[in-house]
Image (cartoon, rainbow, N blue to C red; front, side, top):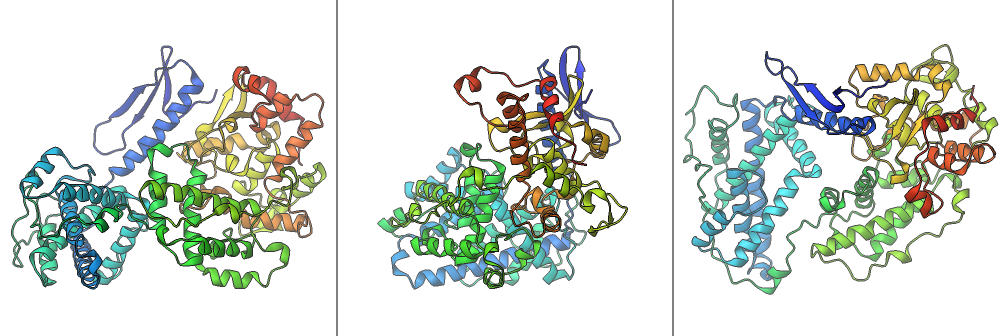
Length: 633
């Protein structure tokens, strides 16, 4: 019987239990009753607890910044922020329309960084803080501006885009100051927290300096950086043995005491200040806010990735970074770019290294049938802007009133059932005669016949799809804990896991494993992944960025195999063709009912009765359906 990791039975109740990593000489455990007698429910809960506990353990691993690296990063933050503040003020002096409200937002920004440095990234202004600032002369509009700035800066610092920007800036600063940086390519969670701590402290110090000194002396940044690195309030291991080598500024205030920064004189709040947005209008920042919004938890992982990748593609194509600058002509131009990109755009890692102009130029050399994204893909990009604009308007960001996305939608030229070609049984057998499944020369020459059968994601993924009709990401993103034995039948769950989500509620299902897959060693492959603690049964396919999917890792070899086996693949066969093949094959089998077929491939019921009152098919009933699918070799 298959068991989930860290799951065991106490009496009749399932419990999750795991040992802490070796942070001390004592053995310690985390244990939690799952309060259920149902093994299937317990396995789902246990897999989520294991995933979250792994994230927690990652977050408490030791950081890697030395005192010299911390000083270099902090000094870079201070210098950069000082230059930015002075540049903004120079621009403001040339813009008389902002003279009334710029001082207020300067004050709010300085106060926000000070509060973050003193008491952490809590975006809310506490009543005690508000009373203290009120006593110092802050008005209600001042406090409103500060509340908005706390929220804006807090989101920016903690967003994925903000973290990536911070890591890149830190790596550049360490490289400039110390030569080759020691910062890891993927810093630990603790190191990211340390970088963020110095980022906030540096920005707070820069704003304090800019308010206190009309012409800040930049050597002060160096002195303050050394003083802060030597501060005993920093994490253990950051103190140095040679304090007092340079003149130090006044001691930092006690974190428990609120000490407002000097508040510059400002004109009364004008109409322009009321219209000034507190939310960052940057398109990528807006997408980050959409993905982080707790009210939008229903957005699938794939959709979140598509929002990010679509925004990046739009910026690369048009050069427009602010959502408030987008108008109808930008979207029209973006649609034209999508219609002229190669159909294979984004599948090759090299695409990320080329500019859009270079990719479009290369597309001119391709056959006409290989150029232009599908109508469905183009409309998907455009439709996601509808969501982006709705959220932007809810944040009081000014969006052009002339935008009409419905005028840009591309007309579908095929019926839904005709959009993807289906494999015939003969084509399935032809496909699996390729060296990937019969033997290739080596792991780099998968298309040249040889004796090596490498059983990785490229080998197993198409086989799993041919014996289930499952979608590409459903099978390639399977985790070890998704495999089980129910009714003495080996099977796997298609459900949300740490690797990917599923398309719809009806897509969640359990699929019996075809006997041919068992004969080929699939269960042994899963057992090895479980023993190694892998988060996916095909760890080599795990994405390395926010926009990549599991299927992207096999696309090149998979697409080339189709071209080789089908003389250039004129029918446009693809991974999804397995799904059409399975559904069509089972429809022709009179012994397979509609319900069994729908439950196997994850389709909704044909009416409300099926959806509300029917039960999922058992493994005993589904296994014969899977076995009706013929062996592919």
